[in-house]
Image 1: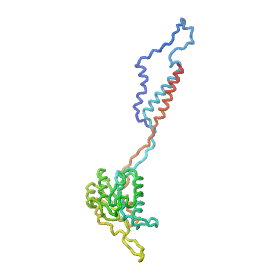
Image 2 (image 1 turned 90 degrees about the vertical axis):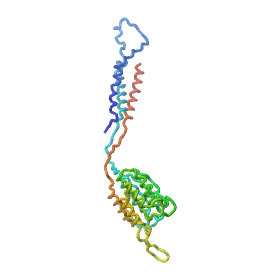
Image 3 (image 1 turned 30 degrees about the vertical axis):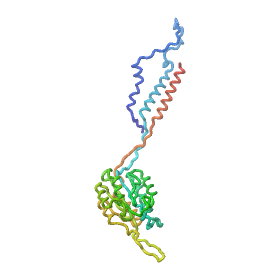
Image 4 (image 1 turned 60 degrees about the vertical axis):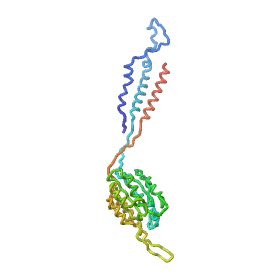
Amino acid sequence: MIHIEWPELFFILPLPLLVRWLLPAQAPTVLAALKVPFIEDFGSAKTGGVSEQRPWLLGVAVMAWVLLVIASSRPQWLGEPIEQAVSGRDLMLAVDVSGSMDEKDFFIKGVQVDRLTATKQVATAFIERRTGDRLGLILFGTTAYLQTPLTFDRKTVATLLDESFIGITDDEPATSIGDAIGLAVKHLKNEQPDSRVLILLTDGANTAGAIEPLQAAKIAADHELKIYTIGIGADQMLVRSFFGNRTVNPSRDLDEKTLTAIAELTKGRYFRARNQEELQEIYALIDELEPIEKNKQFYRPMKELYPWPLALSLLFAGLTVLLRMRVR
């Protein structure tokens, strides 16, 4: 449909008539005079002004003025309303990129991969589903870094997660869980209450950082930040060596007790992901615990139409000037 942004401008349409009525007409300039004693003998002589000689010239000028007013009123074409889901939730992902995430105890389609690669694949699908959420990304190892601030641009968040790698934050094989939580609190504390969520994924224990995880969790609870913790890593893995095969526990350093306590303090939940299937189920469950759609908003695509009447107005104005020159 066509929408007029400033319809009040149509009130100036009669402005030229008011000017003509209020201001006295200018007397025509006489360049030469010819006295005719008997005017009736010159019946073919032209009389009257330009408008009487060329009545359609006034019509061209009127069209130019009307089109100029239409252009000034800013006509727009509005498309059909498009539904846009907005959840109002601010969701931060904190992903462990320490050296232990290089452990290859996950399988994707029969191919053995490291923990970070499996996390990327599952978390990327999760990010793409979170329509209407503002998402952010924290990467942590020895130190924690805000890789992506809160944004509706899910594609950018997914891209930056995919481009992350082991040791991107530092070279030391350490994990700062407390600092990651503290950084999330810093960037979420001023957002709307009951909408702040942190999903923290790690495969180890807190071995670095300026703040202890439980202390950071208490601060998060004070700021109503809900934390879902995910412990990642297989319980058993077969290792082949010169002396034969042996079974090891690649997740022996995982501090499940602390991760569980963090979740309980912040009214979240702790999950254990031993393989890719469990990791997918965890993210699907988080989708259920934190529903995506809270309310709906609509917007209508808009296209400006004023250039068309403006161009026609200029065309008619130019035509009026040319015709007046020819008449004279």
